[in-house]
Length: 416
Ligand SMILES: [Cu+2]
Image (tube, rainbow, N blue to C red; front, side):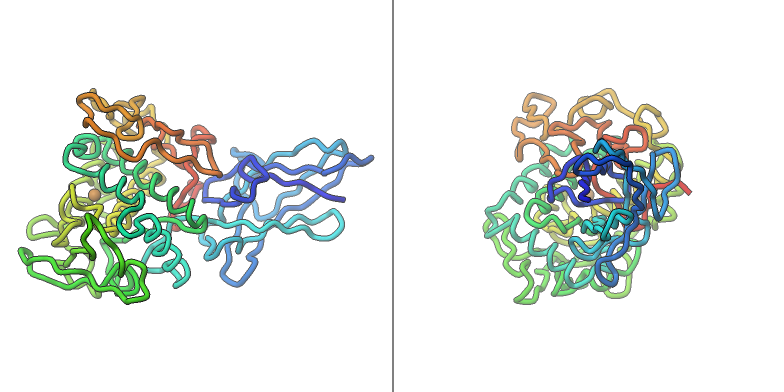
């Protein structure tokens, strides 16, 4: 007897990607019979180290390792949800099996538990798939990576920075490039750089480039890449290379920040307070202090995106916000504790955000590169012209359909 399963609301193979937040699924008998059937759903890795999922009969119940479902004889659908099993993300595409037992032979459906991971701990395969997709976005310095450069420039600074919208705006910016990367290779997620810990494997010639140490006011030299690293051919503004030196020893130290402006640790960042108006001071430190722990492009707003390390740094900024949200259960955009708006375009909850809204009249810049936010096969959120409030409940606690389809390897879905 055959069954049909839909993941993320579709039977399309491009939707077989699961983050930590539950994804809507359904199952049914493919052809009507005379009796109901009982099946048991479970999960196991398709290969050693592969991903695993857990099951939710409904959102209000805790996750389970196995789920028994009764499939009606008439072939009508039965809904359930699956989410990544915390601590067991995938390493490769389709390395997690969704298993159905109870009707004839065991049926398996390969999926991927796809979450953003600590860049320092990626497998060689994960690292190289990310580098290759990144390179494809910026092929010969003429790809759509230029849009991301053109979005994060001086005239757009008030749209992106120095206010409560800093975190939501950058969440959209990261989602935009991550979806572009995934359209090249759906197994890729943005990795994050934990700038408050030594990350010796990131600053190597086979990853983001060997990075020379210089004095606080020293001048930047070019990061060094292996000839086999796609980033060895990185070009921006017609100029090859990535200009970046560090004011610290990247092999042994966390990013320190410049003298008098230390990078807050994760614990210090979370201790800024449980109110958004206090927590969003993290825009200065650790965020700003991490940027200026370098000499070169990444230390200046209009040039920062020339260096793709930008996205690893900002994935960690976003992760810190996500962790703060999870620890404090800050999921409802309507609460001031969760987001504190300012009465200015792009900063209110229901304001759309530049450049995805295409608005080119003051106070917005007179240009809007890149077009609308790309969609995703796994979720319909946040739409092509996201509002500030669409970027907050990224795991869909308040509104399941609001989930943005990504997660982090060290932030669960379920509250403890
Ligand atoms: Cu930044």
